[in-house]
Length: 171
Image (cartoon, rainbow, N blue to C red; front, side):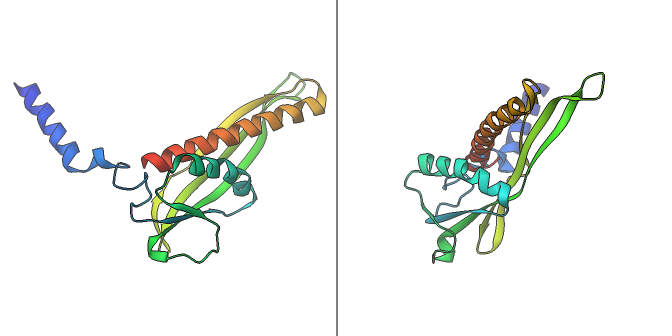
């Protein structure tokens, strides 16, 4: 009997705080339902390399909810949301060495956060989104660069997918 009372009390607490509603409002994830236009904005060069993947997700999965517009286009500010990719960075650092101190493995990390702005105010922040992968040293410098390029491309796709998931779920 005590367990049942505790279970009901816990359910009521979670329900009353709104926890179950996060990301499941009337809009498309974190984008309010009354928004009609959305612009995607990159704040640095790394962000610009990540933006095409995120834009593909928007075009493919946002449906008829809103129109994706170019930054700088005149829009009704009350019905517009700006999605900014901020603090984007990419690092490529040695992570393993052989007995002579020569790097045998590198770690490529891509990270950044997304903020949704409406009327100049932040209405949502994704927190840090990060993807990482390893590049192994094989075949000399050209082999390392080829592996790096392939892993970089894959990590950018993964990053965009994770960013879209957070935007569309609200978490």
